[in-house]
Length: 352
Ligand SMILES: [Zn+2]
Image (cartoon, helix red, strand yellow):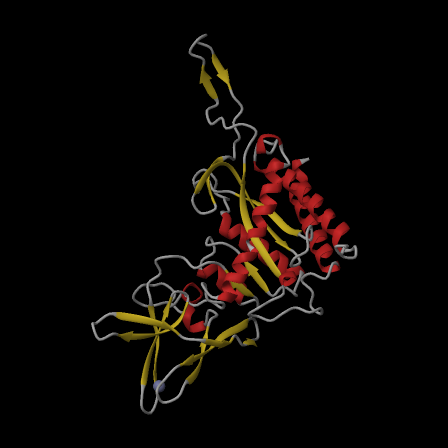
């Protein structure tokens, strides 16, 4: 049965994406919002959850102190200590999934794609695919089948290199910003009577100034627009930023996609010159628009919680990652069936 799991996963994914499009989600025609404020039905939301195995045993043989007997225990071969929600250690297996839903409509969630992520060391598992890569693959698979997607939201497991590949496909990618990224010079804009020193700091372009007591201050530049241009093989996003100035504001276009120049190798470090999507974000974090997209992520907690509480002792009754994924696929079919039965129905209005 489990030999057919990859085909079952792919067939399920294709059917789920069709179901979503049939409900008007990920549509290329219906009202869709804009790049900065996409309609929720056009935003795919990814998350990883750790599912617990039937038992927490980690030792195959245990010694009974009273009887002196050696007892054999069943151990989940794929379970391990995983980090969930950024800081919580849970013993189990990781499953990554993407979903989409309507705003303010109960039971409207459609799970679009799912797969297991494997985190063992490369020596133990040469074909491992950790959470960020798994999520990237799932997002690409969805974009291949649903060109109407406007934005993808994920957690901090996605760094600049992951985001850059989806940005190039012409969507907005939002994740919270990693801490501890140092400001980096972008450009010195020289005009007739003034010079402005622009840096990338906290995920956006900022003007660098030095205060009277020698402190460096990065002032965020207002982003007026997020224009997108179509290239031959990829899409290019820019920030139209306004640099406030005593001589009147200057408007500059700053790329927020990974440019050809960014990818060229620095002769000193032998690494790409600029990981732009790590430093400059299409929708800067800690803005109203960013917080709105971040708020969409709460929905995955609800899915994860339903999954846990649907099973006895919040454990999936399967040893091994393939078995857990099989159960998850069935769960997703159930969730999607509820959405199909609910969203197709007229909205019930409160009476009285
Ligand atoms: Zn100026």
